[in-house]
Length: 436
Image (tube, rainbow, N blue to C red; front, side):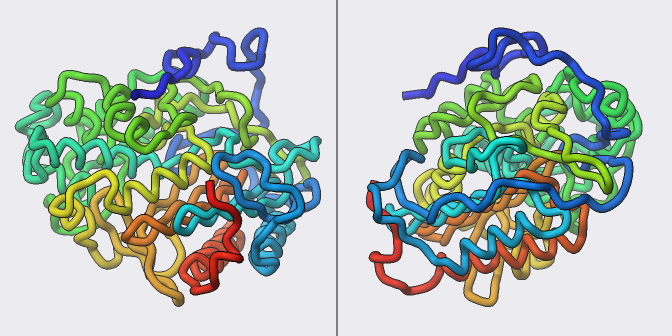
């Protein structure tokens, strides 16, 4: 049955109370000089981040079905992976917290380091809420491809057919090109007008369905289908197409085609800036200054289908196994989804060599291939991937925007590859936690 999403996280909620809070957190003036494109990047004052004091690494990695405690005294896991995650947190400019989940054939390992909130010793947990940034694009892919399976949409359907109010110059762009980032649509999140609004008020409530108006006066960047260029506009258009052909809101389509089938009980698409409790606090850091909590600095309305989803490490793991695997889509649609374009990379690039499919990326590492998506937004960087059969999944979530520091991003990608290698290894089930 469809999962109930708390109303406080569905509406404009700039004045709505969050769970466990008697009233809204007072608005504050953020230290950051400006926050630019909500999904693509943060426009920061200063350069590389500074080290953040954090709690020691959490307890030994453990297995459980839904984020609860593992049976006492029976933690399993690879000490080398735990060290890699702890080293990432301890690195110069490293995130205050990190959590990684590996699953194989129903068994789960949880690795964590640092803290869920600076100033506390609470470790990150699988059921902590977090912003998943551009991994939300895979969710829009799941909705659109589910509609393709039902013949409500077709991959060759055009913007002109379903969204004729958009500029005529865009009308030949197809759903396939939108999902693969070969559309040429200008990126609304890079427009000066959009960034000026966010700089002036990061919590500004946008009309999510009018985000493309910021670039409506601009031509396509190139002939559709002729090249690859990652654009946040693409997935806004995908969601609008899905709404037009069904007559239903994108949020309700997510509940029908994604949350319900995959049992994602703690995943939602909010419009405001508040996060459900408990959550992983996300941070920005700058030289000589303490880490700044930006968990609730930005309204999700400016990212919407391109990056606004809030989820948990546990839900994200279930989602990527279902989307990259055979659970959600027919074999025919999956073949189209996994027709990969070499050189197309997610943002940030995932481990190994990247290639772009339809709302999905292929990551070819030194140990083998996984399929998934990445994302980054102020306070968070995400990686989620699975094997083609969906039976093995890996997620790595950190509470900082690693893309702001090239050295840190390189370290993060190397850490992600270590987890992929562990996922694809052939060790026996005694190393793989506990069955749900």
